Each structure stands twice: as structure tokens, then as C-alpha cells.
Image (cartoon, rainbow, N blue to C red; front, side):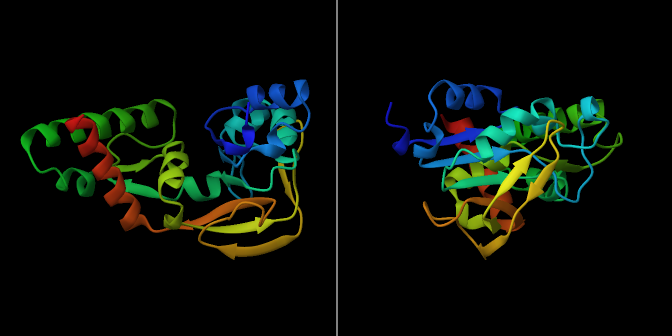
Length: 208
């Protein structure tokens, strides 16, 4: 199915991708890129199943995560909690970018809905205005990889509980070109550029 042309974005447990690899070994090796929201290095986890030892997506199926990360794909990019927990966006700054009452209403609905969900999940206290957007980063990176800085590793393994073990550090860059690294973990980002891009995405949704 021409996997060499595909850039895969994975924002949940990696069970399905792992199943593809088990059924047809070598399939993921041919993917152009795999972008993953998952894992934690030094940051505490958020998976109740593993008593918060790991991030949710990896913790729910550690074996699957290991299968994907050791598949041999030369361009895997991972967004761990170490980045996404701390890359937060100010509700008031997002709302200030609205250019009409219609946009303001839409921005407010999206931001307040997301913040309410974070409160329900115990990720923040009621009244907070700082929003974490874990999964959305995978899509932003897909569009604008230059917004992020990565640290690359030659090897990465995940145990049954979703706990990550990293191999030798390779290099840092603003983007990971196909074939240049094994696994790139995101370590930093241009918050101003990402905030601007999110606002433009909201505007596009309203126009479409």
C-alpha cells in the first residue's frame, strides 16, 4: 500500500500500528514518517493503569509502543509529556487574536471546552487559563516541523508498562530529515509561532 509515501500521525495507544507490523513485518520501516504523541522521560506519567509510571498512550499498550519504536522506521518523531505538559497556551492570548465577534465566540467555545475537559481529567484546577494541547502538536508538527527542536536517539525501547528507555543520543535539530535519525524526541518549541498557527487554524475552520 505504498507505505514509503505515508506520514503517519498517532495520537492514541499504538495498538493498531503494532498490529499492522505484526501482520506484515517490515511495513512500518517503509513509512515516510511516524509522528507520535506518547511517552515520558523525566516527567511523571498520567496513566492510571500503570500507577502513573508512564504516559497514557504508551502505558495502555507498552508492547505495541515498543513494536512501533523498534520497527526500523528511520524517521520517528515523539511528543513526550516532558514537552506537552509544559508547552501551554494562554486562553486570553488566543482570544485576543479574534478578529470578529463570530471568531471570538468560536475561540471562546473551543478554549473553554478544552479547559473544562482538562479539569475533568484532573490535569488542572478550575479557573486555570493555561491550556495544554497534547495531541494537537502532532498535527502542528506535520504542517510546520520548524516550530520544534528535537533530540535524536539511536535506539528507544518501551517496557510492558509503557516506561521508556533511551539509547545513545545522536544530535539536535529543528527537523528530522528522512533517514537521518532513528527516533527524535521533541524537547522545545517556538510558542509564539505555534500560538499564531493555532489562531490561523481556527480562522480557517470558520471560513470553510
